[in-house]
Image 1 (cartoon, protein in one colour):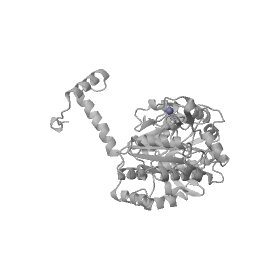
Image 2: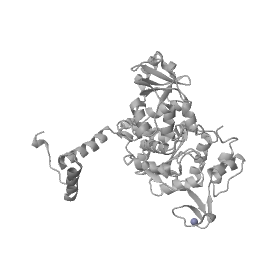
Image 3: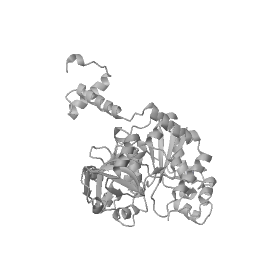
Image 4: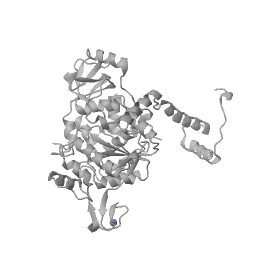
Length: 382
Length: 71
Ligand SMILES: [Zn+2]
């Protein structure tokens, strides 16, 4: 049985048919708010149920509860506020009860019924969500640049924002039908913002050994400079799956959502989102969604203790390394040998090799994966 | 509610004893019956509100999944 949607009901805020036509016409008369790529992705995620039970951008009460207690005002677990930020003059003539149209790249994306316009404290947000206000943290830096007011209210999608990876983009209602069609009762979801090396493959296959299916769901969208480009991640995974995974046990699709690098809080958010896709299990890696040295290596595991009612089971799989004595990929829990026998796969080291156009050794990365990465003149975000 | 609107259900005695102890120790419920009714309502109300798709919608979704090679 696929997971029940978070909060009990899969949200569907997509306008269709004649009501969509009518909204598009009415929208030409509504006040406009221009939104960024990440916000447009959030709107689509709300409308297609990725953020169930949210039906719009958060109102103040939910926003404050999420910051303070990591729960919505109705006690449903939720760790990252989903908010729409504006400057006061963008909503000068808007009062609660008004409908506004959200515009992305000149296209009307959604109609929003404004319920509340309220100020927020970006520093407080950073402290609560990222546990730091250090501007060298990419999530903090991005937060401090956001606009000073928040607008809350339900949205109704009228046009999907453009998706270059449409061919690999599935919505929760699609993955749910797909998992059912495959007869999967247990599904382990894997979140990633990286190209796969052997450590990732080991962790995924360890989970798949005990579940019916594996759902690989990389994030596309804003990432910090130095991270891999979206197209590189997608192509690298396609190569890995084609050569090393049984096709009937794996589903690969992308999710457009910005990385926040909020460590533990974001790990829970990632789990909730995958629950809405129908996953029953969620793989939580070492330093999940972390950056630099801002979070402890297993902090993202600890936080799950606070959510016995999450409705998706976290799988804490230890970091994998190659052990010469064991003669294969293992982890600390199953290998008794000392450090002198262990070869760790460092993402940083791999990145450096790729920057020098060097092919990483096969115990670090599958040659087919390395080839597609090295084919790109510049595989990294600038 | 009239008595005739109620039905009897059998459950394991062990479970009943546990529930009875729970009611006595935790408070909030005046009887095992009330606890059971509450729990059933919780489960059933969620079930009712969970997402169900029309056959037609499901077929549309399957068409896309087939076109993309997922099924
Ligand atoms: Zn070993």
